[in-house]
Length: 129
Image (tube, rainbow, N blue to C red; front, side, top):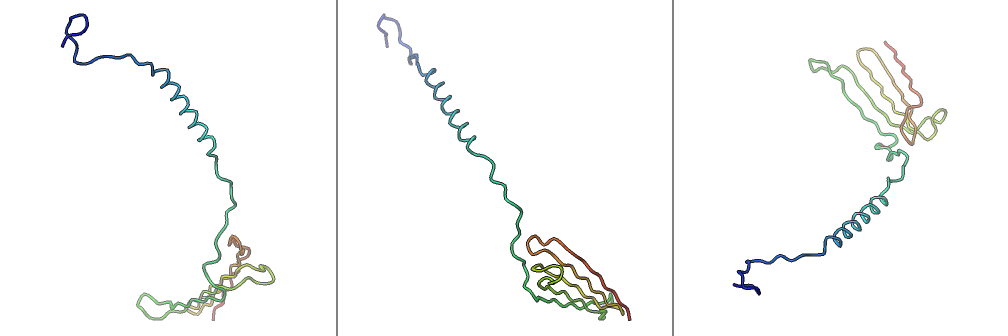
């Protein structure tokens, strides 16, 4: 194939494009749009730590048998969940553990807040027979 001046034509033609300036503007606009979108994405509003309701019911009791290494009965353990003591923890919870084993009776009571379950008071009573 021959071109207009009689020489052989190349199998392809090179055209100058004027898109470089337009592509630069497009790139700038896209970058600005991304920056505005990122600026709009702020941190979430800070919320106070909050807990769900207690995973137990008032008056819930769990009883366990304590066994010795040889499998014989060695005592009992009892866990009780009660609504708070009216004198020191109104509205909170009292968690009690009572263990009777080898002639010793031990009771631990922890009173916790109704909202965040933080402990207010703890008492331990141990008696032996």
